[in-house]
Amino acid sequence: MTENEPKAAAKTAAKTAAKPTTAAAGKGKATPSRKEAELATRKTIVSDRTPEAKKAARNKFREERNRARLGMAAGEERYLMPRDRGPQKKLARDMVDSRFTVGEMMIPMMMIVLFFSLNDSVLVQGVLVLSMWTLVAAIIVDALMLGRKVAKAVAEKYGADKVERGLRWYVAVRSTQMRWMRTPKPQVGRGLKK
Image 1: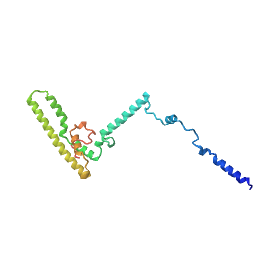
Image 2: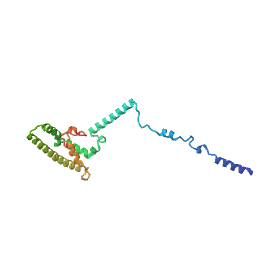
Image 3: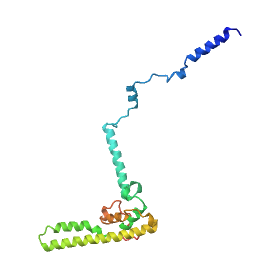
Image 4: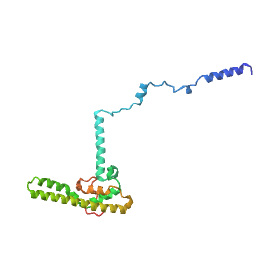
């Protein structure tokens, strides 16, 4: 080895260390401007505005709502509102729906009272007021008795410490609705023991 060879090798090593390689040099492309970067990440806020797209979206939404409405009416758990979900509420609904309740007479009786209240007779209006208060008292007593019955059945089936709060109120409200107006629709017939 000559004297110049180590010096030449050191110079070559220094030159290669000073020159960056293409892999370490960067991304291989220029940094995009802010405007270009924003355009690349921007998503359309408004969906397709063509009439065909609007009609397709409306039809899709209508089908989903119809499926949910039918599912709720049939009592499918995933379509029910939170107040109607759960096995305890299902048992309570079935117990209410399996019998006639005095509360079902509330709306028809209100219509009769409204019709006959047009009469000027004090006697007729007195009888109507008395009959309405009697009906209200009967509805309250019936709802309390039915609520106790349902709470007892739920406690027997699921345990007394696991009875959901508000179950008696749920029963009372459902028992005051006319059978054909109840949601979810009754799943059991009248007179069937639950």
